Amino acid sequence: MFGRVWAGFGPFRERFFARGDLKYLLLDLLKEKPMHGYDLIRALQEQFGGFYAPSPGAVYPTLQMLEDMGYVTSSQQEGRKVYTITEEGRRFLEEKRESLEEIRTKFSHWWHCWGPAYRELWDLAFAVRRRGPWHHVSPEKLRRIREVISRARQEIEAILGE
Image (cartoon, rainbow, N blue to C red):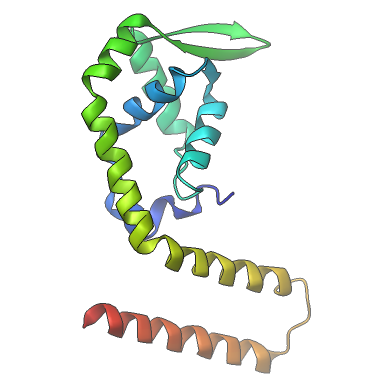
């Protein structure tokens, strides 16, 4: 839905998830069914409403670490590496259930507070994109659009600074 665009913006700039949280999320998905890396990325993106999608550069090393720890196994299927959680991985995840719930609670709290505002920003971006660069927009209209966006940014900064 939204891709990785938000990963470096807003709450994610300050590292939304703690170091190591990704392993719990991956194991939790794998307990449902075996998956390959890109399936896991898409599933996480869907699970977090499009506001979080880990990069392959984060997912694959984490999967390798989980395999080295004996928490997942991998096999080749149709030219892709498919990962399956082991019984040891299930036990580990159960021991860390509280950590997984903290991750979900943190995101749920953020989403409840900020999600609707971010949705409006996305809708604005898509409105501009839909009618933007490939449609002729006069310099005067572009100036007016920039002014509106600038005023909105200034007003939001003032509200947040109260």
